[in-house]
Image 1 (tube, rainbow, N blue to C red):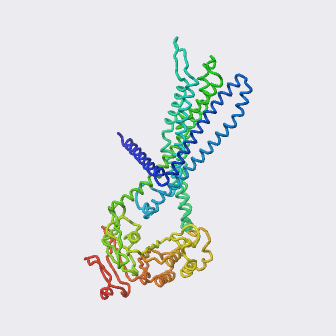
Image 2 (cartoon, rainbow, N blue to C red; image 1 turned 90 degrees about the vertical axis):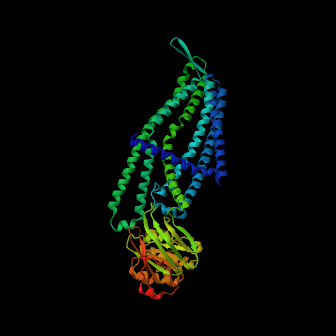
Image 3 (spheres, rainbow, N blue to C red; image 1 turned 120 degrees about the vertical axis):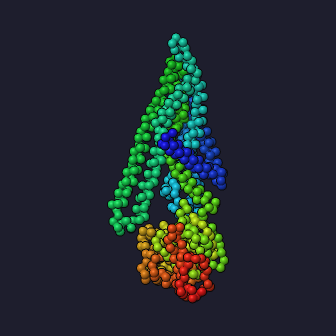
Length: 616
């Protein structure tokens, strides 16, 4: 077997596994807390399909009776059938309306349930952040949750309704064809050959040829549709990045480079759509050809029996109607193969995200290569042999040991690439990979300030009170915080809804983040370059404000500016090592005002300043 064959088999196995994973997740809609409503919709759909089948049968009977009446010139019978037809038409249309409502309600509720399940897993325990740090097929999760999940839940409901309708229609009208057509005797070479149920045989042969042709021609539709959906997702992601980083791009005149990247992505999308176009053209040949021939074939097949008088005109027309219905039932795959291809592509992309979340959950449950979290008393934070690694085991920070008393202000410094940000994210419990133990004071609340504060969509008040709701924080507290951080000129716009993420400057966003601290008053604050966009006087003002307003709050900061030392009592120095960065120095930056700090006495692990040695 060639390498290409091995790769193709591996891809097929992966596709089948992902489809199983999607079915496993999606089927919980009918097994979990929503099962009563789900099964009620299913039963209602089946009942509506059965009613439709009865109406459809009555329409074929109407065809037979009407054309027999026309053939015999029976005006009373024709008039009676003319009066009956509107009733059948209204009943047929009504049943279709009910079926559409039930089908779309099922799709909507299944999507709502599965979206809620997936979003819960995506948002829990920082998974949305951790996915950016691990390898796997989970790029553009927002597109997978919004668009791919919609297609993945819409199509299966349509498929089930279509398959059930097709199966019941085929079974019912095969009986009709067999009853009406009977046997056909064909002279062949001086002998007579009798074909029992010749209309049924003809319908089956015709459907097999049409469906087989579609499968043969459109066998490449699934991978082509998958490639198209992936290209669309990547193009949308690039457009989103341009919008989100508009200011940075505009300031450095990056439009030509961005345009080049967008043009390349669009060209890739159009190439994928061209492949879809060619596949659609091939399937259209079969689909349209089948649709044209279907009404003609039963008339031709019935012509000998009509001409010899063994079939009436009404029976021929009923047979033609039944033949078309049977052909459509057997050719259901012909009509829906493109949708099936889109569904498999979307379901695989949703399942890939589920698999990545499964892997994160499994790794956390096994506890292999993960930081152990716990609570402690008497200290705000304690790190015991804490190691921070990448998800593949690559060491970032190695064996960090430190104890931070409540209310202490600690500055973490080191050269770029020594893992400072990774360490503070581990302290904030966002970074799970590593080893050792991280203990936080029991009941302590932690709030992290990243370098680029998050500004949610909505009002400025929501940005200040985030992550709490706007109704949970008093108006006076919000206005006071805004005034104290230097954003008093925006107080009148607190309830204005606009794109604040694009309106506020980098420094103003960091001021909003400090206003959040004043509003929420956390026990522990973890700051990662949280004043990098501020000028030195503004930084000094906000840091002093923080110390005066939250004197008992523990602060752990990462920063490069030497002025930050004035606002911290202790400095931890990270130094890059081949086996991972280590904390090599623990320096007092001011007079010791609290009980003696603990630091492990290990050779080569620690150096203290003269002031610290004297204090101890």
